[in-house]
Length: 246
Ligand SMILES: NC(=O)C1=CN([C@@H]2O[C@H](COP(=O)(O)OP(=O)(O)OC[C@H]3O[C@@H](n4cnc5c(N)ncnc54)[C@H](OP(=O)(O)O)[C@@H]3O)[C@@H](O)[C@H]2O)C=CC1
Ligand SMILES: O=C(O)C1=N[C@H](C(=O)O)C[C@H](O)C1
Image (cartoon, rainbow, N blue to C red):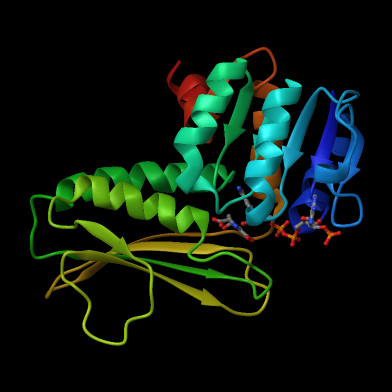
């Protein structure tokens, strides 16, 4: 398969390494020096699929281009999920194929299921408060991380006593109805996510820590191999549900 890469930074490099190791070909590549938005309309025509790990601010323009060009796209770039309904409408109108995930690590997909189960139990246990915390490297441009937002929504949807996510630093007491989702940026941390449930008696923590970017790249490559031949808007969970649950 010939894979076009949009974004050749930390993740684009990891995906290229994984793709070459699996004997795929890296086709056209785009970055700040060769922006996709300024490339000719047929710039992706030699690719079977595009993998996008670029900048949150560019994601929607890139997605529009993939959909209109009819090239299947795996999108790892975070920070655009408020526009999900618009993207879904674009994908459906063009019968395009797009798979996105805030985190392509299979371990995070397992964590998500564990958080879902724990949160459902916690709904009946009002002594437990909940919070989400994430830690990433200093170069990360968006916060909270896409993964922390996703995990926060899983908790929010299961806990009737939480009405909204509050991602901001607090300068006064937090609203008890808010789910506090916080971020730390330090050093070269690949990505750590914790969902915790805290009671007067104990604290339960569900955590994932990436050891490198290889797990994200492997998940993105698995998605790239799964998507061609399908149409619609998919998440990594749809793919895993299909592979694991049949
Ligand atoms: N879903 C997942 O599993 C994961 C998602 N991510 C997300 O992926 C995104 C990228 O992360 P990361 O690789 O660490 O970031 P980097 O900053 O290392 O890479 C960003 C890339 O975007 C490129 N870029 C900048 N401008 C343009 C443009 N106009 N057109 C095309 N490309 C452009 C940069 O180009 P240049 O190199 O020339 O500056 C760079 O190659 C983030 O949103 C991050 O949150 C990260 C890890 C895992
Ligand atoms: O920018 C990163 O590095 C990462 N971003 C993703 C996110 O925002 O959740 C996934 C991973 O944690 C690494």
